[in-house]
Length: 154
Image 1: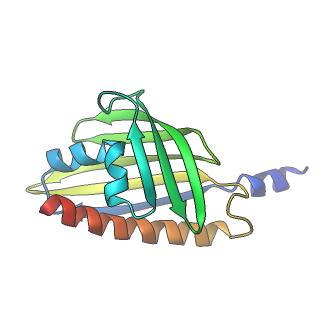
Image 2: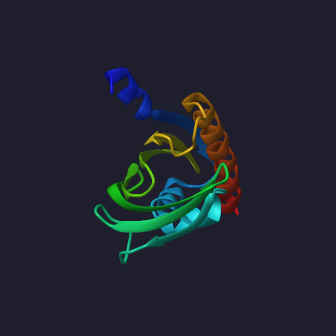
């Protein structure tokens, strides 16, 4: 297999977005840094279970998604928990690899979120181009942030 073919098989999808939530940084960070909450605010998350007493670097969790008609089960790990600053995670086992990070910035009673995500779905979604996957992913996270804003502003 040529290096070009290998590169195409390992297509990397990177996405990022910024969002302002109408809630204090401490509340936003506490909520987003616990993967067990993902099933509440993320439209594609079917279930999420933290396998540790609390979210901390090194803690593992299981998470299930239904996205573009595909069901996916992952085992993941929290990489970084810096209170009110940064939270990062990565997949340890599942149909493909992904990692993500949220960065937090207090802005009065609001919180600025910078979300970055990278995935290598390979052929998991068939012949769907990476550009389309990225577009759908960003659209979904933008909808999810609207849901999260409603939940945390209440």
